[in-house]
Image (cartoon, rainbow, N blue to C red; front, top):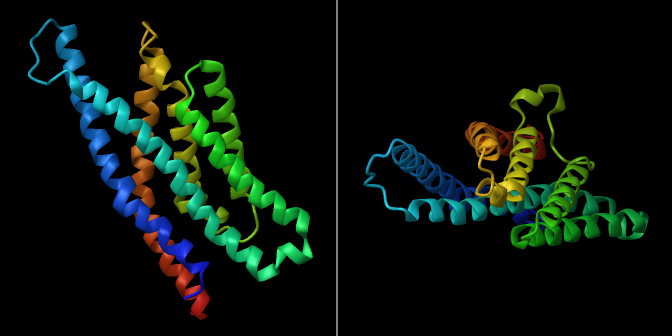
Length: 218
């Protein structure tokens, strides 16, 4: 196994070990939080403890950050393989530096987005993180399946990552918005993201099999 092949393993391993368990936990807490809120709105006594909202907020932020991070790992494999195959550090040094910087700057923007407090900075870092994900995803050797975009692991993943970035950007505004517009948008978009995660579980396994067959010449 070549060193770059470890990147192929890291992406699905992190999804199984870290991301998908968090999806279940966050989904459970989100349902509990909503049920408690509806009960209190109807002036009913809820048996659900108040801490569920805090836990949903905390773990949801880690899930959103983790999804974007695992997307970067997923893109790192085909891009890293292409860099090594073409020996870009010698044949196209500018592109080599550009790709390295894009990974670094996207990761740094994600870190600052996760920790930003003011709305304007969350907007700035969310935009930079999203741009980095999209630009890296447009590079050569990334397996996109554009002709079948509706069942593409790549497009599911990029869309889910962008939704997670948006969630990180607005999550603190949800608690300040008395009209619940941000909350409703959050619920709708993340229900859609949940469907994308389900699709990723299927399409990811399929693409690993197809990439393996392609490399073996099958």
